[in-house]
Image (tube, rainbow, N blue to C red; front, side, top):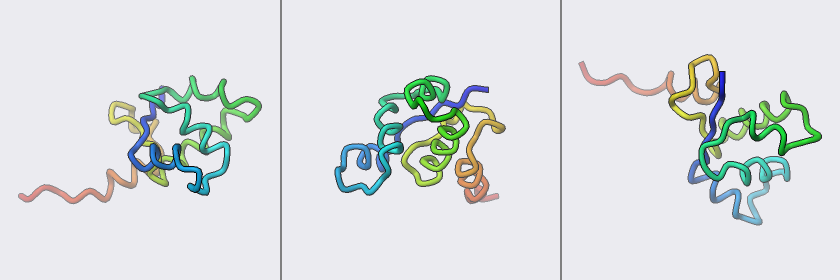
Length: 94
């Protein structure tokens, strides 16, 4: 299944900040996420890194709140961070 990412406000700030402290590969990925983008379009731009390594970085960026997996992605495609955020949402009043 396709994993589609969007940039969060925090990710946008980190991308443009020279003092974000993020490693270069994180900043490169954030620079690629201008609008909703599929992971399979990020992989070729991140050569020579393996797709598995890039997917790990995407998950880390999601967990840190710099990117977000789009809501229309299937549950099996959601990152651990996204599943955790969904799991801890309060239940609506009965």
